[in-house]
Length: 275
Ligand SMILES: NC(=O)c1ccc[n+]([C@@H]2O[C@H](COP(=O)([O-])OP(=O)(O)OC[C@H]3O[C@@H](n4cnc5c(N)ncnc54)[C@H](OP(=O)(O)O)[C@@H]3O)[C@@H](O)[C@H]2O)c1
Image (cartoon, rainbow, N blue to C red):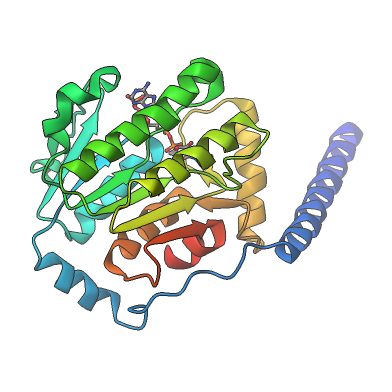
């Protein structure tokens, strides 16, 4: 009984310390929050009206990476808000959906190593969303560059040639082509190269740690999610973000008219648009 009481007291103290640590870290991070979110000319309009106006234009879109965490939620959000008359998933494998809501979703299976042979899959879409990505741990340094830079850029090129005018690209917080870190350097480089293609509109999303509800995860991943989740909950909106907010922000942003041709949405801007 004594040991149990001691254990409970120790756990209580540990939780208390962790809470204090999270609050202190959040306060420090808030001080260094992202720059002012970008402004939109149409932000004052009601979102429902914007959705209705957009819907009447019968536009089509494609998603790269719809089998991934972000892409999956983005697809749900797009289906729920019904702003496109046609949604195409472009990926390396066909996906199976049970729900009736997915029955009209078109799928194009491509070989990303031979994308030129699949140019037709990229033709005729008005808007493109890219949530493609891997990690150095999964694919090695070369594989990471191949997927997160080469596949993304080639897809964007084909989409642009195929008539796509609006491209939404998910990269990552602190992406910079001059970064010393491969992960951030590749993300920054792909941002710059896609921008050079000259889409009428390019939206770049730079989320921090993505908060996802996963049934199974490695202990390190679980711990990171708890930590960043707690930070987000106590008000630090610059380090992490629930994945649903990213998806919602991407869809809402599609309806808006930014003042600039290329916009960069840092984590905080994504969070405020994705509320
Ligand atoms: N996770 C984070 O905390 C975090 C934070 C900031 C930014 N990001 C960035 O946000 C984006 C989305 O992240 P996420 O966590 O949603 O990614 P994810 O769940 O790992 O999904 C990645 C997608 O890319 C596809 N993909 C991976 N390797 C491929 C390959 N060799 N060939 C073709 N397709 C391939 C996957 O297809 P399969 O299903 O077929 O594998 C999947 O659809 C990524 O660019 C990521 O770098 C992530």
